[in-house]
Length: 428
Image 1 (tube, rainbow, N blue to C red):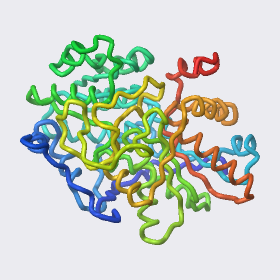
Image 2 (cartoon, rainbow, N blue to C red):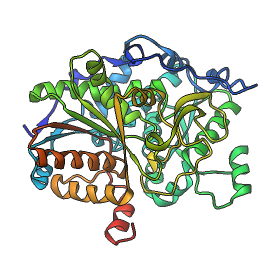
Image 3 (cartoon, one colour):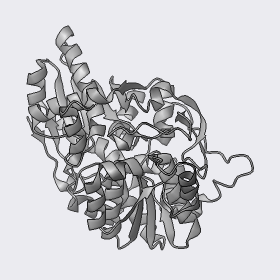
Image 4 (tube, rainbow, N blue to C red):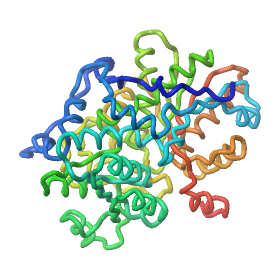
């Protein structure tokens, strides 16, 4: 079976919340000394997502309107068997990849963008502000706001703003306003630029700018594309669909892999399976693949830190490289984040999830091989997961084990061709 497709009526009716099933309680956010960061959250987030952020309900109903939009954008997405890649690697492993690139914006990000825009509109918002790295999240929120009749402003990390001009164009096509971060639109952006006019930017800085604007204006909310509990909650439609598809294929996963920046794609893909592992129903290895240039899980400290550079968010218990860390200007802009989802971080801390770091030249090498074998060009972010999957498949070739490997194919790379061009020309 090369492709497993679900009927649109099989879209999950509820999101899965892993909080009640975590192996130990999730450390609560904290205020910095003398700060009111937690008290400010209702000024920047809608009531709907704040309730979900703190919820201990295992299953949270997906609103009918959100499910209808999910259908419109192509959910459920297909699960493909990577037979071409298996043949290229000469491996007895069976490799599957969940095609989140099937969405109109080319990545998994719409799953939460639609939900967040819906709850913001229901709470009376007129505009959402956000950050974006490579542009996948900004593109998704721009479209979601258009569908929910909201305005959208995107602070795009400056290096990606310059590297990926067509992402900016798509956001503008969907009605989003896009500015390079750091910018002169906020006081924090002006401060950064005064210190370094050529600053490449970071997701932490862009988050600070978007939050500052949301705090300044009435009827404006902030929307985050990863890290927080409610974001990973919305992404669990990926894993819930994959469970049904693997059952149809008669497969049980031995290894599940996803790339991690803030953790939303990875968490959404594996959390439903982690529940089965915690319940003793599944023996599976979960691998979070990150860039060596931004090794949050493999080299960061597990401690409380701000989610942004300016220190406007509450303190979160997570693996972090430090909120003032500025990652190198690699092409996988969506993974250039100093911190990590507290839920994913806790699972790594508990040994349920393993982390692996991959170098930039390796991910492009893997992306080229995948494109040749499967005909699909993966995003640089996605290539981290593909690289690890190929490594595991080669191990199976050496041992003869017929393992089932499942990859969350988080997005396509058709707007990342500059990076591929640089690799093919020997510049990476």
